[in-house]
Image 1 (cartoon, rainbow, N blue to C red):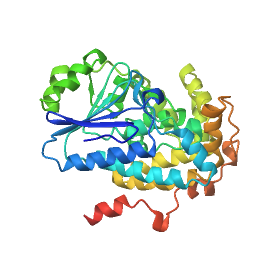
Image 2: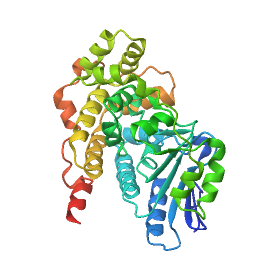
Image 3: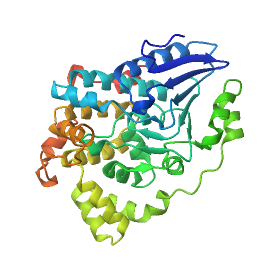
Image 4: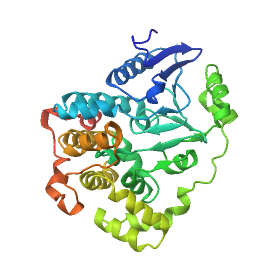
Length: 354
């Protein structure tokens, strides 16, 4: 199968598998709209191709599978009204859904950085492999946005309140942490990855995992469950911060400082999204919710400002609007969850209709 003209996604058959390689190594394989559409089209073809027994997804270069979406594009498009970004999100979430429901083994090699959209193209797969170099996270609150790509469901279903902690602080997981938190299944040492992926051309994924995977090291974040579960069980971001300050632990104080640096609106919407995601019955329903939240988020000044501060000007000094948690109204939070009418993603309704 030929690649798209810019070769940002490489696709070819190798023995019993179809191989997809995200191929923008200088950008740590950040996703643009063409890449999302290319992946979706190839996966649709291979789902019906009897020559393809499994799919293997990797990232080019040594830095990571995927550093997320192309946030410079979101910055520029949001200033123009966000139509392009909304189209991107629609196709990206449909891709995430296809991956989660893929009829064949989908092997995601989650080596190095796996952030945001990178989680969406890997952590919904059926065989999720991490290494000792994995650094996985949903860092959206750092740029004035809210975890998406089905990530709010993964965060909501993580043990205890670990997902809430990770979402609000924009923290990262090691490979062992990712397995403990439900974002991954197996650990394969990075020096065995080449052999592991090569064997998949002839072997069933289960057999390859049995040959190359090793037991996960103890998860560091698992050892912090006691204070994390207590502090983040609170009903509001303000109360969470109060508990973190009163906890008396340096780790809790650091978490509070990290949270206070984030967009107040994004923090409140994120907490509401995770609490709602816990009650939603399926990934489809969560993706529908995330599309509403992302649609509304593009109308907020904080996404443009967050990307400016972190990526464009790199002054690391965002000026959030509103600037404090107290100024973020319940009505503003609710706006992010309002139905979109004919613009709805509609995955949950389509799933029920099948």
